[in-house]
Picture 1 (tube, one colour):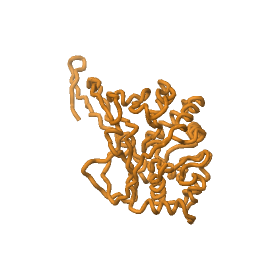
Picture 2: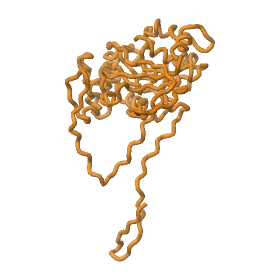
Picture 3: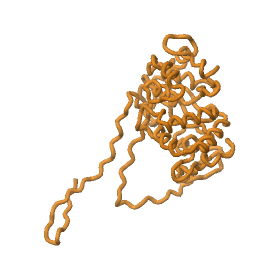
Length: 330
C-alpha cells in the first residue's frame, strides 16, 4: 500500500490509504473433477489510468485459407471468422451474425462448420429436433452444468432465454444438414503435458510433463490455430492406457454397471432417430454430459433414462466409455 497526502482546505494534510487493485481470485471449482470443467483464469482488473490499447493491425492467416484477419476480427462474436467458407453452405444470419446486441452468432462458438470445440458441443449432423429440444431445456431451466462457473454453459443458458423459436429452428436445420468430420484423435498414455486454460479448454505447456492418472485431457493439435478459431484445426484426447478397450466392453457387452450404448445411440454409436450420435465426438463434452446426468444438473426428456445408465459408473468408467466413443469413426 502507498500513502499519499491530499490538501484539505489548503491547510490540513491527512494521509489517505490507496490500496492497489488485487487480481480477482479464480472461482472455487464446484465439482471434484475440475480438470473436466475448465475455468478460465480471471481477467486482470482494468486500470482506469491506463490509455486504451491501440488496435493491433497484425494480420493472421491459417492453412488452406486465403483470408487475412486481425485479432479484432477473429474475436468478433457477431461476425465470426469464416476461414473456410467452402467447407459449408451459406450460413443463415443467426448462425453467421447472430442478433445484436443480445445474441452472438452460433458459428462463433460452435464454428461455421459446426465441428465445435472441447468446451462446447459439436452440432454438425445432429438431428434438428434434438438441437431444438436442448435449447428449450436450457430456456426452461432443465439443463445446466455441474460447474456453475463454467463459461460456455452459462452463455448457452443466457442465449437460450433471448432467442426465439424461429431463430432456433433455422439454426438447428442448418447444423443438422452438415456432415460431421473426424475431429479428435484418441491417444492412450501414462503422462501428459501440463496445461493452461484458454478459451475454456486445456492447452499444453511446451516442455512440461506430469502423470495423467484418472483423467482425460483434450487439447488442440495446434493451440495458435485453435485460438484463431480455425475450423480445420483438430484436437487430441489423452486417455489412460487401456481405456478404449475397457470402454468398448462397457458399451457393447452386457454387464452389471450400465446399459449397452447401442440400444439407444445406434450401431457404431452413429445415432438413432432423434437420439444423438456419439462416435468421434469430443470426449470432454461427452464426459461432462454423463457426469451432469449423474449429478442431477441435467434434466429434460431423456434424463431419467440416462441417469439410470450412469448411476453405477465411476469417473474411471465414464472416461473409458467416452474414450471408446471418441475413437470410433463418425
